[in-house]
Image (cartoon, rainbow, N blue to C red):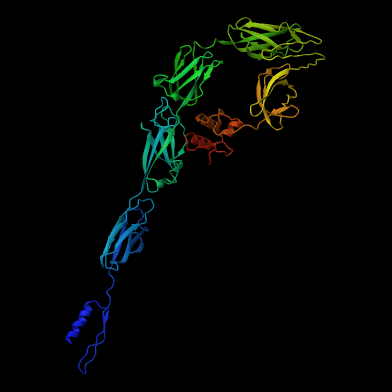
Length: 596
């Protein structure tokens, strides 16, 4: 009996699942019921996760993983997520390592994952601190022409000020430093959302005050990143503002063919000057020379290399044309000269056409007298000129065909004799031979004139150089290659208005030629160059200045200029067109018309 009890105890101690044993007793004894041993319950523990640092503690999802299992819980108002009865050991009896992770709250930095183990019957407390995400915005300025912090000309990059706006409310006002930096500020969480803009309040010395708000953003390669859209992808961004330098031109008055040299004085000499800050000019026959390229703000030396004269002038306002006159080179003073016409019958001759020639035989003026008088403008005092008759007044013949006079002497008087019957008068012009036949019969005047003209096709090939031209019917000779509905360039060397009125100078016109030789102006070849408001073939800040004036109603644009000024192609002129043009000039957009 003692041996059997020891065996049962040993089996129970060994953790046997169950053991049914029957004990034998002497006759008359009672049997005991079977004894069963139960399995030990798996050991567990608890985990409490606390979060901190966020404005709203509740609703944050916490994930716990371990031993191939995943458990989730959501934080309560106190920021706690509770995980109860998590297994302590795996099947092999090893302690389970649990990984704790947080679903990152919007606007916060990612927290590092945590690990822990749990003891049987114990409660482990884990804490997750959260850090609010911040974004650093840096704004710097650079010269639009040099594309760096190096100023153009005598301009000074620092000193101007800008205001940054968030949803149309001023966020802060900042000044440009000597290093070109405007400001740097930090946004927390989702403060980047909304509309961010910047506006120049005062321009640095030598730069143009645009006054227009522009959106804050930057280029990531060729992609424009707006601060209010995609900035959360970045923790730091530097945005660049381009300053447009004040620039202008010099208009020089001197003798024809004088050689002019212009350079920025602060550079020390023409040779040391940057190519963008100097210019050379040749004075034309008109006595004028105007730069083609703009020079930046500053003081310039203007030299007349032909005469040795030197002067200094400043460019201080945008788009300025600064006049420069060299006193020793300016042509003699000009004046006007009066000519009087008389007739032997006491009446005032009407009509007639005359050329004024200088001493070299060059035509300087053409006129038709009015009420027996003519005033010739822009003649040099003391110089001798010749009057050449091209066409006599109706019913009169001149004493002679040419007259000479010297400006400053007494006025010239040209006398005519009245005629009757039929008289033929032949006169010769200076550049083309012209025959005029005038027949007076019952007050009827018939005029024919051979007019020199040129006709080109659309490719610029000359087709005709002369022919009969009838002003009353506007007919010309058709070229052999004439094609209907095709435009041509017609250049009339002389255009007859009427026998008793002026004959105009040469005109050029794009025309449609009809089968009978008549023509009409062709309006279909104008092309739109968006942004070219002043119609000079270029798109620059002077176009933006003119566009602003047009929008303000201080200037009126012609049809072509209005088409070019519609920089967003919406059919209307407004502030949006100015913004589009300025964005194009500073490369915020790369094509015109700009969309939206």
